[in-house]
Length: 106
Image (cartoon, rainbow, N blue to C red):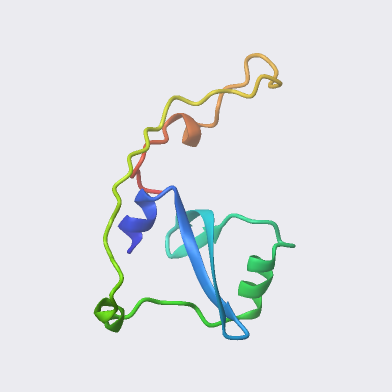
C-alpha cells in the first residue's frame, strides 16, 4: 500500500455522511505510517474525517456488477523546480525540493 501511495501525486478520499457516499480528490503525502491529506481545516471533508466516519471501500463482490473495472495509465513527468517570480534573488529551493524525484522514499 505504501508503494502505491508514494507513487501517486493525488488520491481519492471516500467516506459517507448520513448514508450518502462522497469521493473527494486531493493531494497527499506520506511519512512513515502517517498519511497527510491536503485541505483547509474548514473544509467539509476534513471536518467530517476529523469527526470519525464510515469509509467507502470496494469489495470483491463489486466485480460481479456489470461495470468496467481497470486502469487508465497516465504518465506525469516531474520537471526541475521553478522559483516563484516574487522570490528574492539567491534563495535556493530546500534540499528536499531540489532532490525530489517520483517514487523516492519520503
